[in-house]
Image (cartoon, rainbow, N blue to C red; front, top):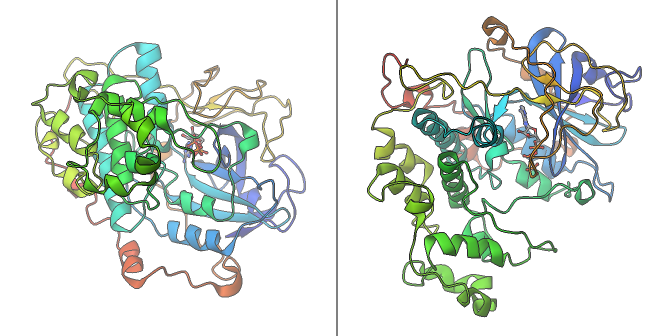
Amino acid sequence: MGDGGAGTGSNRSSNKPEWLQQYDLIGKIGEGTYGLVFLARIKSNRSKSIAIKKFKQSKDGDGVSPTAIREIMLLREITHENVVKLVNVHINHADMSLYLAFDYAEHDLYEIIRHHRDKVNQAINQYTVKSLLWQLLNGLNYLHSNWIIHRDLKPSNILVMGEGEEHGVVKIADFGLARIYQAPLKPLSENGVVVTIWYRAPELLLGAKHYTSAVDMWAVGCIFAELLTLKPLFQGAEVKATPNPFQLDQLDKIFKVLGHPTLEKWPSLAHLPHWQQDSQHIQGHKYDNTNLYSVVHLSPKSPAYDLLSKMLEYDPRKRITAAQALEHEYFKIEPQPGRNALIPCQPGETFVNYPTRPVDTTTDFEGTTNMQPPQPVSSGAAVSGGMPGHVSNRSVPRPMNVVNMQRIPHQAMQAYNLTSQAVMPGGMNPGGIPMQRGVPQQQQLRRKDQMGMSGYPQQKSRRI
Ligand SMILES: Nc1ncnc2c1ncn2[C@@H]1O[C@H](COP(=O)(O)OP(=O)(O)OP(=O)(O)O)[C@@H](O)[C@H]1O
């Protein structure tokens, strides 16, 4: 882990921390609940783009706890083609802010869906939907088999690589961070970012205290439906209160489509806190039948519908797992999923030219804006210089003021493995905290992707 002992400072300032000197900061690309995301280039390899996530200090000013450090160290061992790589971790000791450097991905499902809905007004082709879903399940299966529950799957957390050797490959982002957030980093309520509840599983909405991997499968079901229709499936209005308010409108949106849950189909429902405490409200929202297939425009007999309805099973114990979903018939019939999800499926079909991420070159690592002119950008990222605030969080549609649509050549994005020694083996684990959460899990973490790309259903020799 790098050390920012030299004090804070943006890449442009003279007193920047030592670790930061290995990067050229390009600008801000996003803002989430816990901090800002920046695009940077590695100086020693200018073609390598990195996304640096800076976790701001909470209002209380508590720094990065040993628990968080332990969690982060585990995340560094996660290696799978469909999970975004955490390449570096830095703590700036001057203000105890935390920086995580990830491989950069040019696209995400939020933007891909938005592009189809608002720009080209055209459904995402079946091959792309199936390939995105298969890869998402493949990454999730790896995380779940390593005892990592994502807990916050949503389209903006599902990244897709831009042009290069990994073009069209899905990368799950933000995994495992929920545990880090919980311990030392409180949501930055003052930054106005809305935490979406649209992908939240019904057991959580009804007050279940424990997360299981089934919550991620519910979110995958919602995302699958959104890929098909280009609209969020359950778009409830959030009740804002602390802690954990009862989200009746979100449940209402679910019940309206899937029908009212029953104790017969979901016996443990009776033990969920809100089912008991808010039964009057819940009973007022009774809808008998499911009309999921008509909402997602699928035949009730189609394999796609069968898979979706198994992901949106009310009872988490009966909900399909990622491993089971990967074996579903939907992935065995044509078109079969492939590694590059973004290529056309049928002969004659045109490439969809997805926009590159806008980059706000006026915001530095401190989150402060200056009006320096935009720097030349050599990756595919689009620069929106001189327009502070142009890169906003994904809970609201982002304005897209793309002024530069350069794309990098294929060769330039070749796989590049950052060595992990940039993260200090000693000083980064204050107090010598043991980093194992359990031997079996560690053993699994060290196991490389066993499914790998060989896990793909048999490929067609040519796609176009
Ligand atoms: N490795 C990455 N490469 C490129 N863009 C990324 C990367 N990681 C995150 N982003 C983008 O940065 C933006 C902000 O991400 P972040 O995870 O902070 O927030 P979020 O997922 O939108 O919301 P929240 O943090 O509230 O869950 C998103 O648009 C996301 O797609």
